[in-house]
Image 1 (tube, rainbow, N blue to C red):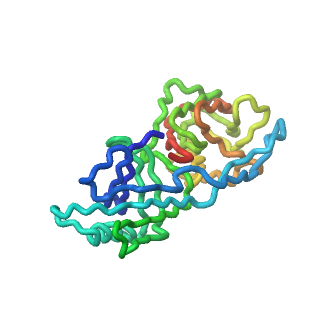
Image 2: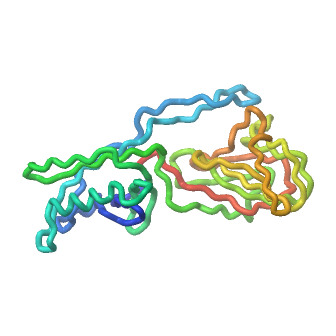
Length: 276
């Protein structure tokens, strides 16, 4: 991930920006250091066995991410700024709405590469220092940095029985969303990693022409349901007992689907990053 600035937002309003490559003395906030933008204390969590080779599957998890930014206050007195007014601006970002969430946007020029949401855990302001600074610590329960908008896959060339999904941006594994419309009767639907001899994700529900399946394996928004004639049927209880949700990994992900009696409607995902 290449970035040259970090912007602090709350309720979609920008309160401060911190340049990483073009710091000059006209900027009211000068970043001095930042911690928590890398990866620390990962732990492997076992979650399944592969059906054929009995390999153990692990995901790598971490404690909630804490990001600490130390900022030098650089008031432009000619513009009416003071250290106190700059501190007050940052204080206002702590809880500017009922959600009390703040957002860090990681920028490359005018492009937002990734974002992270959280809560201000600590705001330290040594009031009697000759060099006025503040240090803000943000805590986020969702560890990963994630692009603000989805990448939509062009489904015209995606195979039905052996789809290949390519993600050249992400550095971390992540879920994805898909939507398909069935073109014939299907007794059950199964998805697995290519080359597997057993179906890791088996939906024990029949489908017929015109049924639309909605699927998401995103960690914080998983769902699985079918719509037939405007009637919604949730399908999580039809999954096999050892179901392993399909994921996308950095680079190329090769999957296998048990039928071709459907058309792709949509595939999308958020590029996801371990850190800066």
